[in-house]
Length: 476
Image 1: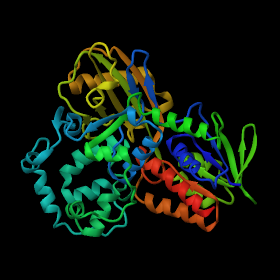
Image 2: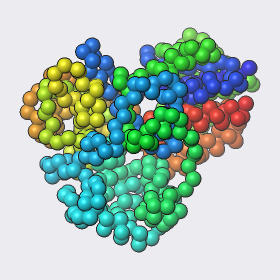
Image 3: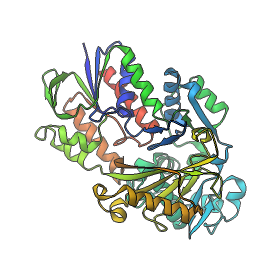
Image 4: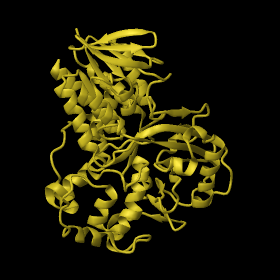
Protein backbone atom coordinates (compact mmCIF):
# COMPACT_ATOMS: atom_id res chain seq x y z
CA UNK A 1 0.00 0.00 0.00
CA UNK A 2 1.88 3.06 -1.21
CA UNK A 3 0.50 6.57 -0.68
CA UNK A 4 2.28 9.35 -2.53
CA UNK A 5 1.69 13.02 -1.72
CA UNK A 6 2.37 15.37 -4.62
CA UNK A 7 2.95 18.94 -3.41
CA UNK A 8 1.96 21.49 -6.06
CA UNK A 9 -0.66 21.16 -8.80
CA UNK A 10 1.19 22.93 -11.59
CA UNK A 11 2.14 21.03 -14.74
CA UNK A 12 5.07 19.30 -12.94
CA UNK A 13 2.93 17.95 -10.09
CA UNK A 14 0.13 16.92 -12.46
CA UNK A 15 2.61 15.16 -14.79
CA UNK A 16 4.19 13.24 -11.88
CA UNK A 17 0.69 12.18 -10.75
CA UNK A 18 -0.21 11.11 -14.30
CA UNK A 19 2.85 8.83 -14.54
CA UNK A 20 2.28 7.45 -11.01
CA UNK A 21 -1.28 6.59 -12.03
CA UNK A 22 0.07 4.26 -14.70
CA UNK A 23 1.56 1.95 -12.07
CA UNK A 24 -0.30 -0.69 -10.00
CA UNK A 25 2.35 -0.21 -7.25
CA UNK A 26 0.73 3.05 -6.15
CA UNK A 27 -2.56 2.74 -4.26
CA UNK A 28 -3.24 6.39 -3.62
CA UNK A 29 -1.95 9.73 -4.88
CA UNK A 30 -2.91 12.94 -3.06
CA UNK A 31 -2.26 16.22 -4.92
CA UNK A 32 -2.07 19.29 -2.67
CA UNK A 33 -2.34 22.65 -4.45
CA UNK A 34 -2.33 25.90 -2.43
CA UNK A 35 -4.18 28.04 -5.02
CA UNK A 36 -7.74 27.79 -6.32
CA UNK A 37 -6.76 26.24 -9.68
CA UNK A 38 -4.53 23.53 -11.16
CA UNK A 39 -2.11 24.16 -14.01
CA UNK A 40 0.32 26.69 -12.53
CA UNK A 41 1.76 28.96 -15.20
CA UNK A 42 -0.22 27.26 -18.00
CA UNK A 43 -3.06 29.72 -17.87
CA UNK A 44 -5.33 30.78 -20.76
CA UNK A 45 -8.18 33.28 -21.03
CA UNK A 46 -10.96 32.09 -23.35
CA UNK A 47 -13.20 34.98 -24.21
CA UNK A 48 -16.88 34.38 -25.00
CA UNK A 49 -16.37 35.60 -28.60
CA UNK A 50 -13.84 32.79 -29.27
CA UNK A 51 -10.55 34.66 -28.76
CA UNK A 52 -7.85 32.93 -26.67
CA UNK A 53 -5.02 34.67 -24.78
CA UNK A 54 -2.09 33.04 -22.97
CA UNK A 55 -0.73 34.46 -19.70
CA UNK A 56 2.14 31.96 -19.54
CA UNK A 57 3.83 29.78 -22.19
CA UNK A 58 2.11 30.09 -25.58
CA UNK A 59 3.73 27.42 -27.74
CA UNK A 60 5.54 24.15 -27.02
CA UNK A 61 8.43 22.81 -29.08
CA UNK A 62 8.11 19.19 -30.30
CA UNK A 63 11.86 18.64 -30.70
CA UNK A 64 14.02 16.13 -28.85
CA UNK A 65 13.10 13.38 -26.41
CA UNK A 66 11.41 15.73 -23.96
CA UNK A 67 9.30 17.20 -26.79
CA UNK A 68 8.28 13.73 -28.00
CA UNK A 69 7.46 12.73 -24.44
CA UNK A 70 4.97 15.62 -24.12
CA UNK A 71 3.34 14.78 -27.47
CA UNK A 72 2.99 11.13 -26.38
CA UNK A 73 1.16 12.38 -23.28
CA UNK A 74 -1.06 14.70 -25.37
CA UNK A 75 -1.91 11.70 -27.58
CA UNK A 76 -2.75 9.51 -24.59
CA UNK A 77 -5.04 12.21 -23.18
CA UNK A 78 -6.99 12.35 -26.47
CA UNK A 79 -5.98 15.94 -27.24
CA UNK A 80 -4.48 15.15 -30.69
CA UNK A 81 -7.48 16.62 -32.51
CA UNK A 82 -7.00 19.97 -30.73
CA UNK A 83 -3.36 20.47 -31.76
CA UNK A 84 -2.48 23.65 -33.65
CA UNK A 85 0.89 22.94 -35.31
CA UNK A 86 3.26 25.58 -36.70
CA UNK A 87 5.62 24.12 -39.33
CA UNK A 88 9.28 25.09 -39.61
CA UNK A 89 8.52 26.67 -43.03
CA UNK A 90 5.88 29.00 -41.50
CA UNK A 91 6.74 32.70 -41.39
CA UNK A 92 6.52 32.62 -37.57
CA UNK A 93 9.28 29.97 -37.53
CA UNK A 94 11.53 31.60 -40.11
CA UNK A 95 11.18 35.25 -39.11
CA UNK A 96 12.26 36.36 -35.65
CA UNK A 97 13.39 39.90 -34.95
CA UNK A 98 15.58 41.88 -32.58
CA UNK A 99 14.96 45.53 -31.79
CA UNK A 100 18.35 47.28 -31.81
CA UNK A 101 19.21 50.98 -32.29
CA UNK A 102 15.48 51.77 -32.36
CA UNK A 103 14.94 49.51 -35.37
CA UNK A 104 13.57 46.03 -36.03
CA UNK A 105 16.13 43.66 -37.57
CA UNK A 106 15.29 40.19 -38.85
CA UNK A 107 17.60 37.59 -37.34
CA UNK A 108 19.83 35.86 -39.93
CA UNK A 109 18.34 32.63 -41.30
CA UNK A 110 19.05 30.42 -44.30
CA UNK A 111 22.33 30.25 -46.21
CA UNK A 112 22.31 33.88 -47.38
CA UNK A 113 21.90 35.01 -43.75
CA UNK A 114 25.00 33.01 -42.82
CA UNK A 115 27.23 34.12 -45.70
CA UNK A 116 26.91 37.90 -45.52
CA UNK A 117 26.73 40.43 -42.69
CA UNK A 118 23.11 41.06 -41.69
CA UNK A 119 22.40 44.16 -39.55
CA UNK A 120 22.67 44.62 -36.61
CA UNK A 121 25.68 42.24 -36.91
CA UNK A 122 28.88 43.51 -38.49
CA UNK A 123 30.21 40.18 -39.80
CA UNK A 124 28.73 37.02 -41.35
CA UNK A 125 27.56 34.39 -38.87
CA UNK A 126 29.42 31.69 -40.83
CA UNK A 127 32.72 33.49 -40.14
CA UNK A 128 32.05 33.42 -36.38
CA UNK A 129 31.20 29.69 -36.60
CA UNK A 130 34.31 28.90 -38.70
CA UNK A 131 36.61 30.74 -36.30
CA UNK A 132 34.88 29.11 -33.30
CA UNK A 133 36.45 25.73 -34.18
CA UNK A 134 39.90 27.21 -33.37
CA UNK A 135 38.94 28.51 -29.91
CA UNK A 136 40.37 26.38 -27.11
CA UNK A 137 38.19 24.64 -24.57
CA UNK A 138 37.24 26.48 -21.37
CA UNK A 139 38.79 25.31 -18.09
CA UNK A 140 35.97 26.37 -15.74
CA UNK A 141 33.44 23.96 -14.28
CA UNK A 142 30.73 26.52 -15.10
CA UNK A 143 30.59 29.90 -16.81
CA UNK A 144 28.04 32.61 -17.53
CA UNK A 145 26.27 32.32 -20.90
CA UNK A 146 27.56 35.78 -21.92
CA UNK A 147 31.16 34.88 -21.09
CA UNK A 148 30.91 31.50 -22.89
CA UNK A 149 29.45 32.98 -26.11
CA UNK A 150 31.81 36.00 -26.06
CA UNK A 151 34.76 33.62 -25.79
CA UNK A 152 33.62 31.23 -28.52
CA UNK A 153 31.62 33.40 -30.97
CA UNK A 154 32.51 37.02 -30.19
CA UNK A 155 31.20 39.82 -28.00
CA UNK A 156 28.78 41.20 -30.59
CA UNK A 157 26.73 37.98 -30.75
CA UNK A 158 26.80 37.74 -26.94
CA UNK A 159 25.70 41.38 -26.47
CA UNK A 160 22.85 41.30 -28.98
CA UNK A 161 21.61 37.81 -29.90
CA UNK A 162 22.37 35.90 -26.70
CA UNK A 163 21.48 38.71 -24.30
CA UNK A 164 18.08 38.97 -26.08
CA UNK A 165 17.56 35.20 -26.19
CA UNK A 166 18.19 34.83 -22.44
CA UNK A 167 15.65 37.61 -21.79
CA UNK A 168 13.11 35.86 -24.04
CA UNK A 169 13.56 32.35 -22.62
CA UNK A 170 14.53 32.92 -18.96
CA UNK A 171 13.61 36.61 -18.46
CA UNK A 172 17.17 36.61 -17.12
CA UNK A 173 20.58 38.21 -17.40
CA UNK A 174 23.02 36.31 -19.63
CA UNK A 175 25.90 37.70 -17.54
CA UNK A 176 24.63 35.76 -14.48
CA UNK A 177 22.93 32.69 -15.97
CA UNK A 178 24.87 29.42 -16.16
CA UNK A 179 25.67 28.03 -19.61
CA UNK A 180 25.95 24.53 -18.14
CA UNK A 181 22.43 24.61 -16.67
CA UNK A 182 20.59 26.80 -19.20
CA UNK A 183 22.17 25.50 -22.42
CA UNK A 184 23.65 22.10 -21.51
CA UNK A 185 23.87 21.16 -25.22
CA UNK A 186 26.37 24.02 -25.83
CA UNK A 187 28.37 23.20 -22.69
CA UNK A 188 28.50 19.49 -23.58
CA UNK A 189 29.46 20.25 -27.20
CA UNK A 190 32.52 22.18 -26.01
CA UNK A 191 33.42 19.57 -23.39
CA UNK A 192 33.05 16.54 -25.68
CA UNK A 193 34.01 17.92 -29.10
CA UNK A 194 36.01 21.02 -28.21
CA UNK A 195 33.71 23.10 -30.44
CA UNK A 196 30.04 24.11 -30.75
CA UNK A 197 30.17 23.66 -34.53
CA UNK A 198 31.56 20.12 -34.25
CA UNK A 199 29.18 19.35 -31.38
CA UNK A 200 26.19 20.35 -33.53
CA UNK A 201 27.46 18.31 -36.49
CA UNK A 202 28.54 15.20 -34.59
CA UNK A 203 26.23 15.28 -31.57
CA UNK A 204 27.37 16.17 -28.08
CA UNK A 205 26.48 13.04 -26.15
CA UNK A 206 23.81 10.61 -24.99
CA UNK A 207 20.25 11.75 -24.25
CA UNK A 208 17.19 9.95 -22.90
CA UNK A 209 15.47 7.88 -25.60
CA UNK A 210 11.72 8.35 -25.94
CA UNK A 211 10.12 6.44 -28.83
CA UNK A 212 7.75 8.72 -30.78
CA UNK A 213 4.04 7.83 -30.67
CA UNK A 214 1.70 8.61 -33.61
CA UNK A 215 1.41 12.34 -32.81
CA UNK A 216 5.17 12.76 -32.33
CA UNK A 217 5.74 10.89 -35.61
CA UNK A 218 3.35 13.28 -37.31
CA UNK A 219 5.29 16.24 -35.86
CA UNK A 220 8.49 14.83 -37.44
CA UNK A 221 6.85 14.12 -40.83
CA UNK A 222 5.22 17.57 -40.97
CA UNK A 223 8.32 19.30 -39.53
CA UNK A 224 6.62 21.17 -36.70
CA UNK A 225 8.54 23.99 -35.02
CA UNK A 226 5.99 24.45 -32.21
CA UNK A 227 2.38 23.71 -31.34
CA UNK A 228 -0.49 24.91 -29.18
CA UNK A 229 -4.05 23.71 -28.50
CA UNK A 230 -7.27 25.10 -29.94
CA UNK A 231 -8.56 26.25 -26.52
CA UNK A 232 -5.12 27.38 -25.30
CA UNK A 233 -2.37 25.53 -23.46
CA UNK A 234 -4.39 25.41 -20.23
CA UNK A 235 -6.30 22.55 -21.93
CA UNK A 236 -3.29 20.33 -21.14
CA UNK A 237 -3.43 20.60 -17.30
CA UNK A 238 -7.25 20.51 -17.49
CA UNK A 239 -7.11 17.21 -19.40
CA UNK A 240 -4.57 15.70 -16.98
CA UNK A 241 -6.76 16.77 -14.04
CA UNK A 242 -9.78 15.08 -15.65
CA UNK A 243 -7.71 11.93 -16.31
CA UNK A 244 -6.56 11.83 -12.67
CA UNK A 245 -10.12 12.27 -11.36
CA UNK A 246 -11.36 9.42 -13.53
CA UNK A 247 -8.54 7.09 -12.43
CA UNK A 248 -10.16 6.64 -9.03
CA UNK A 249 -6.73 6.57 -7.32
CA UNK A 250 -6.03 10.29 -7.10
CA UNK A 251 -7.39 12.83 -4.63
CA UNK A 252 -7.06 16.39 -5.88
CA UNK A 253 -7.15 19.19 -3.28
CA UNK A 254 -7.25 22.88 -4.14
CA UNK A 255 -6.58 25.61 -1.57
CA UNK A 256 -4.63 23.06 0.45
CA UNK A 257 -1.47 24.89 1.47
CA UNK A 258 1.11 22.67 3.18
CA UNK A 259 2.30 24.25 6.45
CA UNK A 260 5.20 21.85 7.09
CA UNK A 261 6.44 18.35 6.43
CA UNK A 262 8.41 16.15 8.82
CA UNK A 263 9.96 12.68 8.39
CA UNK A 264 8.13 9.90 10.26
CA UNK A 265 8.73 6.16 10.80
CA UNK A 266 6.61 5.29 7.74
CA UNK A 267 7.58 8.24 5.49
CA UNK A 268 6.20 11.75 6.09
CA UNK A 269 3.76 13.64 8.25
CA UNK A 270 2.23 16.53 6.27
CA UNK A 271 0.65 19.38 8.27
CA UNK A 272 -2.16 21.27 6.54
CA UNK A 273 -4.33 24.10 7.87
CA UNK A 274 -7.12 21.67 8.75
CA UNK A 275 -5.20 18.63 9.94
CA UNK A 276 -2.35 16.19 9.39
CA UNK A 277 -1.94 13.45 6.76
CA UNK A 278 0.63 10.70 6.29
CA UNK A 279 2.39 9.64 3.09
CA UNK A 280 5.00 7.02 2.25
CA UNK A 281 6.65 9.28 -0.29
CA UNK A 282 6.56 12.97 -1.29
CA UNK A 283 7.07 14.35 -4.76
CA UNK A 284 7.59 18.10 -4.37
CA UNK A 285 6.64 20.16 -7.41
CA UNK A 286 6.76 23.34 -5.33
CA UNK A 287 9.13 26.18 -6.20
CA UNK A 288 12.47 25.67 -4.39
CA UNK A 289 11.90 28.54 -1.91
CA UNK A 290 8.39 27.31 -1.03
CA UNK A 291 9.77 23.83 -0.28
CA UNK A 292 12.57 25.33 1.86
CA UNK A 293 9.91 27.00 4.09
CA UNK A 294 8.09 23.76 4.99
CA UNK A 295 11.03 21.36 5.56
CA UNK A 296 12.16 20.78 9.16
CA UNK A 297 15.03 23.30 9.63
CA UNK A 298 16.88 21.16 12.18
CA UNK A 299 17.25 17.85 10.29
CA UNK A 300 17.23 19.30 6.75
CA UNK A 301 19.33 22.47 7.18
CA UNK A 302 21.80 21.81 4.29
CA UNK A 303 18.89 21.08 1.91
CA UNK A 304 16.98 24.18 3.08
CA UNK A 305 20.02 26.40 2.46
CA UNK A 306 20.57 24.99 -1.04
CA UNK A 307 16.88 25.45 -1.94
CA UNK A 308 16.91 29.07 -0.74
CA UNK A 309 19.84 29.75 -3.04
CA UNK A 310 17.65 29.40 -6.17
CA UNK A 311 16.25 32.83 -6.99
CA UNK A 312 13.26 33.65 -9.23
CA UNK A 313 12.12 36.62 -11.31
CA UNK A 314 8.76 38.32 -11.79
CA UNK A 315 7.37 38.95 -15.28
CA UNK A 316 4.52 41.25 -16.30
CA UNK A 317 2.63 39.61 -19.17
CA UNK A 318 0.46 42.13 -21.01
CA UNK A 319 -1.99 40.76 -23.60
CA UNK A 320 -3.18 43.31 -26.16
CA UNK A 321 -5.76 43.07 -28.94
CA UNK A 322 -5.90 45.62 -31.77
CA UNK A 323 -8.56 46.01 -34.44
CA UNK A 324 -7.33 45.24 -37.98
CA UNK A 325 -3.89 44.16 -39.18
CA UNK A 326 -1.41 46.48 -37.43
CA UNK A 327 1.95 44.70 -37.68
CA UNK A 328 4.64 46.21 -39.94
CA UNK A 329 6.31 42.76 -40.31
CA UNK A 330 5.23 39.11 -40.14
CA UNK A 331 7.03 36.77 -37.77
CA UNK A 332 7.03 35.20 -34.34
CA UNK A 333 7.91 38.41 -32.54
CA UNK A 334 10.88 40.48 -31.47
CA UNK A 335 13.28 40.45 -28.53
CA UNK A 336 15.09 43.43 -27.08
CA UNK A 337 18.64 43.33 -25.67
CA UNK A 338 19.13 44.83 -22.21
CA UNK A 339 21.27 47.62 -23.72
CA UNK A 340 18.22 48.87 -25.68
CA UNK A 341 15.41 48.74 -23.08
CA UNK A 342 15.91 47.07 -19.72
CA UNK A 343 12.21 46.96 -18.82
CA UNK A 344 10.68 45.44 -21.96
CA UNK A 345 11.98 41.92 -22.73
CA UNK A 346 10.13 41.30 -26.00
CA UNK A 347 6.86 41.32 -27.91
CA UNK A 348 5.21 38.15 -29.27
CA UNK A 349 3.03 38.52 -32.39
CA UNK A 350 0.49 35.91 -31.23
CA UNK A 351 -1.80 36.28 -34.26
CA UNK A 352 0.94 35.18 -36.67
CA UNK A 353 1.70 31.63 -35.37
CA UNK A 354 -1.81 31.04 -33.98
CA UNK A 355 -4.44 32.97 -36.01
CA UNK A 356 -6.95 30.33 -34.82
CA UNK A 357 -6.91 32.08 -31.42
CA UNK A 358 -8.18 35.35 -32.92
CA UNK A 359 -11.88 36.02 -32.54
CA UNK A 360 -13.55 34.54 -35.64
CA UNK A 361 -15.36 37.70 -36.87
CA UNK A 362 -13.42 40.72 -38.12
CA UNK A 363 -9.65 41.02 -38.39
CA UNK A 364 -7.71 41.59 -35.19
CA UNK A 365 -4.06 41.43 -34.08
CA UNK A 366 -3.14 39.84 -30.75
CA UNK A 367 0.21 40.75 -29.16
CA UNK A 368 1.84 39.90 -25.84
CA UNK A 369 4.39 42.24 -24.25
CA UNK A 370 6.75 40.63 -21.70
CA UNK A 371 8.32 42.98 -19.16
CA UNK A 372 10.56 42.98 -16.11
CA UNK A 373 12.26 39.68 -15.36
CA UNK A 374 15.71 40.17 -13.82
CA UNK A 375 15.20 43.95 -14.28
CA UNK A 376 11.70 44.18 -12.73
CA UNK A 377 12.67 45.89 -9.46
CA UNK A 378 15.13 48.24 -11.16
CA UNK A 379 12.57 49.46 -13.73
CA UNK A 380 9.15 49.03 -12.09
CA UNK A 381 9.95 48.91 -8.36
CA UNK A 382 8.63 46.28 -5.95
CA UNK A 383 6.14 43.91 -7.66
CA UNK A 384 3.51 44.49 -4.93
CA UNK A 385 3.60 48.23 -5.67
CA UNK A 386 3.40 47.95 -9.50
CA UNK A 387 -0.01 49.02 -10.82
CA UNK A 388 -1.80 47.47 -13.78
CA UNK A 389 -2.29 50.97 -15.24
CA UNK A 390 1.44 51.69 -15.23
CA UNK A 391 2.35 48.28 -16.70
CA UNK A 392 -0.30 48.60 -19.42
CA UNK A 393 0.87 52.12 -20.32
CA UNK A 394 4.46 50.91 -20.56
CA UNK A 395 3.44 47.96 -22.78
CA UNK A 396 1.32 50.01 -25.20
CA UNK A 397 4.07 52.62 -25.42
CA UNK A 398 6.57 49.87 -26.37
CA UNK A 399 4.21 48.64 -29.11
CA UNK A 400 3.75 52.21 -30.39
CA UNK A 401 7.48 52.97 -30.41
CA UNK A 402 8.83 49.62 -31.59
CA UNK A 403 6.09 48.56 -34.04
CA UNK A 404 4.64 51.93 -35.00
CA UNK A 405 1.11 51.01 -33.82
CA UNK A 406 -0.48 54.38 -33.06
CA UNK A 407 -4.02 53.18 -32.22
CA UNK A 408 -5.04 52.12 -28.72
CA UNK A 409 -5.75 48.45 -28.09
CA UNK A 410 -9.44 47.46 -28.10
CA UNK A 411 -8.84 44.94 -25.28
CA UNK A 412 -6.06 44.31 -22.77
CA UNK A 413 -5.19 42.16 -19.79
CA UNK A 414 -2.25 42.57 -17.40
CA UNK A 415 -1.04 39.49 -15.51
CA UNK A 416 1.74 40.01 -12.98
CA UNK A 417 3.44 36.61 -12.72
CA UNK A 418 5.24 36.76 -9.38
CA UNK A 419 8.39 34.60 -9.04
CA UNK A 420 7.48 32.69 -12.20
CA UNK A 421 10.88 31.77 -13.67
CA UNK A 422 13.72 30.27 -11.61
CA UNK A 423 17.17 31.66 -12.44
CA UNK A 424 19.92 29.08 -13.01
CA UNK A 425 22.90 31.16 -11.97
CA UNK A 426 26.47 29.84 -12.13
CA UNK A 427 26.89 26.78 -9.93
CA UNK A 428 23.19 25.79 -10.23
CA UNK A 429 23.92 22.27 -11.47
CA UNK A 430 26.32 21.56 -8.59
CA UNK A 431 23.70 22.87 -6.13
CA UNK A 432 20.98 20.55 -7.49
CA UNK A 433 23.39 17.59 -7.39
CA UNK A 434 24.16 18.42 -3.72
CA UNK A 435 20.42 18.51 -2.90
CA UNK A 436 19.83 15.08 -4.42
CA UNK A 437 22.94 13.72 -2.71
CA UNK A 438 21.61 14.94 0.68
CA UNK A 439 18.21 13.33 -0.01
CA UNK A 440 19.91 10.05 -1.00
CA UNK A 441 22.35 9.93 1.91
CA UNK A 442 19.59 10.64 4.42
CA UNK A 443 17.24 8.17 2.72
CA UNK A 444 14.46 10.74 2.52
CA UNK A 445 11.51 9.45 0.44
CA UNK A 446 11.45 12.78 -1.40
CA UNK A 447 11.75 13.73 -5.09
CA UNK A 448 12.27 17.21 -6.54
CA UNK A 449 10.24 18.11 -9.62
CA UNK A 450 9.56 21.31 -11.56
CA UNK A 451 11.21 24.35 -13.11
CA UNK A 452 13.47 25.03 -10.11
CA UNK A 453 15.89 22.20 -10.97
CA UNK A 454 16.30 20.59 -14.39
CA UNK A 455 14.95 23.00 -17.03
CA UNK A 456 12.28 25.72 -17.20
CA UNK A 457 10.42 24.69 -20.38
CA UNK A 458 7.04 22.94 -20.23
CA UNK A 459 8.66 19.86 -21.80
CA UNK A 460 11.46 19.81 -19.19
CA UNK A 461 9.02 20.15 -16.31
CA UNK A 462 6.75 17.35 -17.59
CA UNK A 463 9.79 15.11 -18.12
CA UNK A 464 11.02 15.85 -14.58
CA UNK A 465 7.63 14.61 -13.32
CA UNK A 466 8.02 11.42 -15.34
CA UNK A 467 11.61 10.85 -14.12
CA UNK A 468 10.62 11.33 -10.46
CA UNK A 469 7.66 8.95 -10.78
CA UNK A 470 9.78 6.26 -12.47
CA UNK A 471 12.62 6.57 -9.93
CA UNK A 472 10.14 6.40 -7.06
CA UNK A 473 8.46 3.31 -8.52
CA UNK A 474 11.89 1.70 -8.95
CA UNK A 475 12.60 2.31 -5.27
CA UNK A 476 9.22 1.08 -4.00
